[in-house]
Length: 86
Image (cartoon, rainbow, N blue to C red; front, side, top):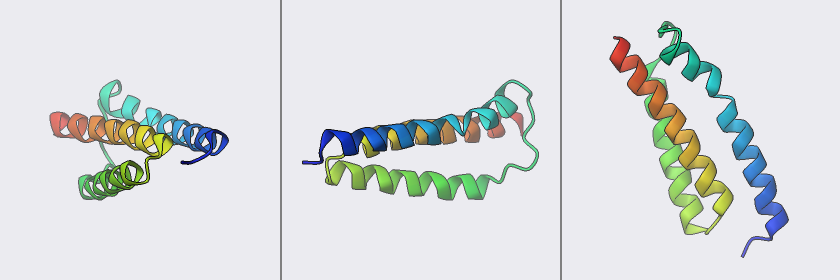
């Protein structure tokens, strides 16, 4: 079992990582701009996040599970927004 203080560091890191996607989500969904967004790149990032999510599940890390679910949600919001605009 991972100590709580280590999980807390992971949760904070995950939260910061998720917040980093907010400007991109705003740009796509509010400003309706999608120039410069590479769907293949976002597809690879999504695949990576799914694998990290499985890893977090296997090692039973709440921080990794929550961070990857949240980040994957952000990435999927961007992908669906871009697809809607295109």
